[in-house]
Image: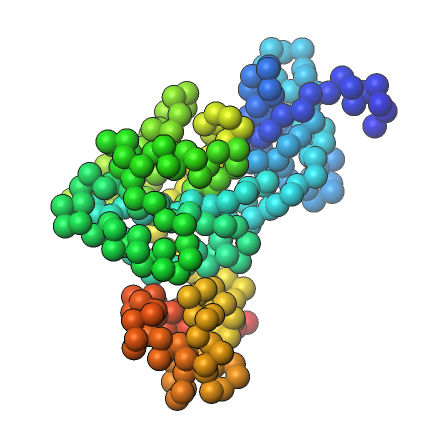
Length: 300
């Protein structure tokens, strides 16, 4: 592409993509509704939310065409987004009760994609049994950055904003935990639809149907993604699972056998640490369940 043509193009960031139509945020110009040139299909390329792109402005106001995808510094597969710096995994302290098995699965998924994680427990205002601090303590002990917040009452939001400053953060978690309410409380422009909780099953209705990048000021973006109610373990062998439980590592040197699974073996440093309270039983039991799932998984 000639230098003169490049100079006439605008640079922006894809903040939303639905059915081949992309909203591109161009600094100082606003959001343009764009389609991608056909050459991307020929080259088996697809623009992703989070991509920095060059676009050509069309005569029709607010319209454009994406002509180039700039180099990505990261790409994650699920959700399929680009240039993400970290993940924030959101669960509610209560209503619905947290599924720690799903939380561990999400941590593994983000770990596979080498994304640092913030574990955020929302709905502190409903925490009548004061369980939030103990939940945070479980994951803080494992080395994860954890926060306890209330989107409704604004508790912990300043601390959360500091974690998000200057970064693009993908937000994941099951429906009904207050992700949309939390995003609404962090910025004033985009209002995310919030869902009700079913009184029978204490599960929320999905309110996010596509990935969307939301600016929250100061070069910070939040990527809201469709809710997760279940999650399989993809491209992971059972022998590799322990690497995603960082609290095991200090004790593995005390295992008698190389390649110890930390389940059936004798003289296991991890099981000794479990008995001594250095590793939480909740996390260890989740590890055993996931190990068994991987062990029994059919391979084709």
